[in-house]
Image (cartoon, rainbow, N blue to C red):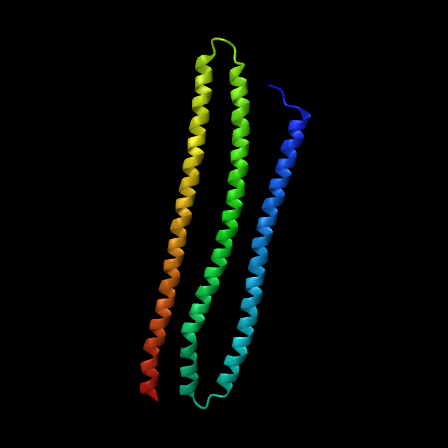
Amino acid sequence: MTTSPEQFAAAGKANLEAVLELSTKAFEGVEKLVELNLQAGRATLAESTETAKALLSAKDAQEVLALQSSLVQPATEKVASYSRQVYEIATATQGEVAKLAEAQFAAAQAQITSLIESALKNAPAGSESAVAFVKSALSAGQNAVESAQKAAKQAQTAAEASFEQLTQTATTAAKAATSAAAPKRRTAA
């Protein structure tokens, strides 16, 4: 079982390509977040300007209160939307990185398995029990990794469901608060 310089070079090249691809995916995710933050900043600045103008043109306290309470629900929905978009970008980037990492891991695992199989084929006579033990350990390791990957995917699915539920709850609460404030404004006027 010898390893040639060509094998080392190929492995080094494959690792470099994997690192570059991972870096590209991570950079793309950061780029999307920066763009989202710029859009959110522009929108917030424009909305703040309009809100300030509206507050300054209010004739009395009731009008100011009405304006403030009318902004609660849209603001909550915007925050929820922004949070959802950040979460989607992060999840998509993490998913792409995970796929690349899984592919790299699978390739490395196949290479290790191949090397072990090659070594086991050349095992001396009488080492059958040791060969069987190594094969069993290799299989158990592969099963453990697969179980961990499956558990991670289930945890991600559960986190996504929880995030969606939290977003819906916050939006519903904002709508309820806005609706509850509306009758109070009318009776105070």
